[in-house]
Length: 148
Image 1 (cartoon, rainbow, N blue to C red):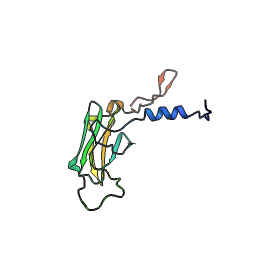
Image 2 (cartoon, rainbow, N blue to C red; image 1 turned 180 degrees about the vertical axis):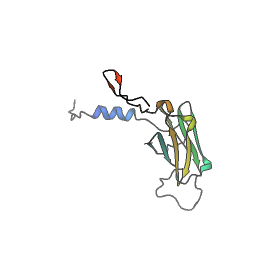
Image 3 (cartoon, rainbow, N blue to C red; image 1 turned 60 degrees about the vertical axis):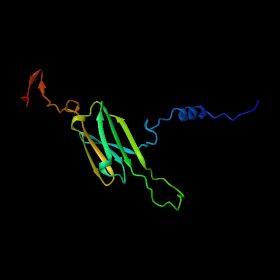
Image 4 (cartoon, rainbow, N blue to C red; image 1 turned 30 degrees about the horizontal axis):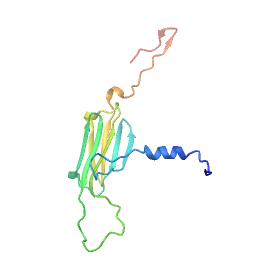
């Protein structure tokens, strides 16, 4: 028997490592692209960084409430003589999917591409937007002003 120093978070870290979500797709070799999700006024914006990827090589779809961005970057076949000392830029296919909230009007979504960033604007559904009500002031049950 040996003594082991007690670490109250050891089990938590072990569980976190075993249940860490993976953003890889089912396609072997696919990688996830970074996303920002921003709320601006009455719409959500999803911004995906895809530097160096031609807009023609990017596909944006919304199906069954799931937004999916897929594409492919050409692999470099350049210098055959040298070898990489460090390679961090990815090539090949990429895929990123996320489930949209029910408050999004997917029928009116639009996407743009500028400076290596794909932006998908997702307006809120009209029936989910906040409504401003006219306040009716009464005095003992009698209306003081006419409703607008």
